[in-house]
Length: 238
Image (tube, rainbow, N blue to C red; front, side):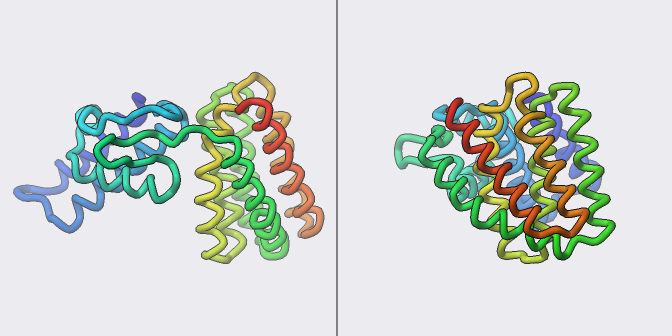
């Protein structure tokens, strides 16, 4: 919560200091809309806005110190991404956790993300591999500290880098949306001490080991095991 509010305030201050007189209409609305989207999405992913929770739009605007328009537009974008439901005359609700939904997402990830990592193993440069190594080193530090939020964000970063390295923008867009919808299930199911290391960190290391050797079949197998392990873990905790 504090991080989200600070994030908004930082952006507000940067706008305040960079203009004298009226703010340009073309830049500020988009910036505020983007801010609202990122902050609300982050709170949904980390369950600060809990599954099934009704969102008081006026209270949200006041808390984030943002106008109704950018918040409303952000909520509509999140609805299109499957993270909130907007019900006419009833309001906004954070989409409840559904085991059926996450299992369907995992089925699609087993097809798309295993193919993605094959491409990564074939196409990754030394610079790409170094970037993945740095990401996993940082993830290991957060794992030792058991900082659940940073562990989750590191997981997201690792998968987003893989999607980018694959070099297919259509595939990358699909994977980002799927992974975003998976994250809060991760947050709910992997909070127990040691569970992240067992189900995520070690498996990411196995995926990276295959990529280093440009071994596409091994990378695909490691990714499949990773996603299946996630599926089995979620089934026990959702």
